[in-house]
Every structure is written in structure tokens, then in C-alpha cells.
Image 1 (spheres, rainbow, N blue to C red):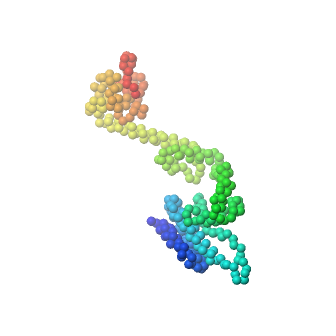
Image 2: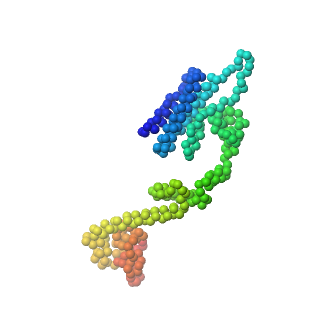
Image 3: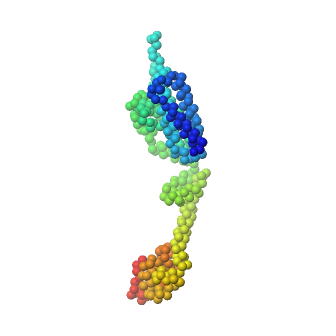
Length: 341
């Protein structure tokens, strides 16, 4: 484990150890609460700095859950200390009879983790210990402008949290507007034709096998938008390479059999099928049947492939895809019909 990884884990452990129980929390005075809040901020600053360096060193850390776990624990701790500090700061009515300042709904201000481009981290409310009231406070602290105005009239109460979420979805879940914003953002990257080429490349890449997809990603430029012609050229060369490999695999077995000079039909040594005198002495119809029985290519009389993959020349008499020994003359074609296939 690297030094940065150990430091990140240690800071997370330190944050977890800084969680007091309810009894301990009530026993902490104003001064200690203030110090603990400052310590939380220092731990967060150190963690964010360490985590950023760690993610630059190892991109796999972007998918780790350390950052999410730290953010959830940080929010929980700081919210607990802030609530307790607000209780300590509260002063009841004085003996002079003057009423205390008008109580305002307390809003927990949580220092958000520094964003990691291109991902924007927002507070997470996955902690089951948070009440809807606390979630509502977090939500308000994250909004501004039109979004804040949409829910500003709602009182901070448990039941209004769901209402606020529904209002925000209804107000801002504008799919057409979102698409327009994304389209404008894409236009800053290139022309309409370049953007269309990239979308077509993305769709095509999803259809490729894993090896071809990896090869394409290795070849594609990272500092420009590649045109569609680059993809066409790559796929054309890739198909040619795969055909060459397939042909080499098909012709590998026949060449071995030829070197050994074994007749596949009669299992005789010293000659291959088309040089076998016994095979050459029988009728084309019998030759055809025997070749098919031992799974030979009817075009070259070699094993290991079918006639569709055969690269050998065709019949010297009729130029069709069968061996000359399997050629039928006019009388044979009238009286004898070669097997199908």
C-alpha cells in the first residue's frame, strides 16, 4: 500500500474516532465543541489534499468508496457538533424580562469537499440517522438563485422536505432545456459535423468486440475530435487483419497433412488424396462420397476447412469449386448426381 493510501485510510480512521456518543456530546462544553469543529475542518483539508494526490497517482481510486464514506461521516459529525453548539449558545429569557432575540430556524452550514473535476460532489443524505428536517437544512444550504426561491416559502419542517424535492423536480426537470444546454456545451468542443462523427463513433464502438474496442481506444487521438473517416479506415484494416489470421489458421492443418503425405481416404502413406492411385481410379461420384465421408474440402481434397474458405484454384475443366477428380462429364451428370453440399 502506498504512503498516500495509508495516509488517506488513517485520516478516515481519525474521523471515525472523532464521533462522540450522545452522552459524551452532551458533556462537551462550548470551548471544546469549537475546537472539535476546527479539528474536523483540518482533518477534511488534509484528507481532500491526500485523496486528490492519490487519485492522480492511481485513477482506480476514483471508483473507491473512501471519499464517499469520508463525506458522509464528516457531515454526520459536523452536524452533531453544530447542533450541540447551538444548544450551548442558546440563552433563555433574562431576569430583566427582556425577551431573547427572535429565534430563527437554525441552518447547519457544512463545508463541502473540494470538487474533483470533472465530477461535482454534493452532500449525500444516505445516512439513516439524519432526519428529514436535517436533510432539508442540507438541501437549502446547497441552493441559490431560482432554485432557492422555489422552496424559500416552505418552513423548515420534516414534512416539507419531500414537498421541497417535488417542487424542485417539477421546476427544473426540463428535459428539452437540459438537452439544449448539453448541445451548447458540446458545440464548444467542435463543429456540428465533428460532434455528429463522435456520436456515431460512440454508437459503433459499443457494437465492437472487446479486443477491437480496446485497439480503437488506443489509436484514437485524445487532443482532437477524430473524424468518422478515421473509424472507417481503422475498421477496414482490422477486418483485413482478422481475415488474414483466419486464413492462416485454416491453411495450417492442410500444410501439416501435406508434409506428412498421408491419404486421408485410404490411410496410405507416401501420397496425399489427390495423388493416391486408388482414389484416382474410382468414379467421380465415388470420389465425391469418400471425400465427404472423411470431411475433406471438395475443392482441394485437404482436411481442416470447408469449400467456402478454400483458397485453392477451381476445377480445371469447368472452373467450378470442386477438384478436377470430382468433375462429372456430360454422361455422368445425366446418370449420376453428386451428393448435395
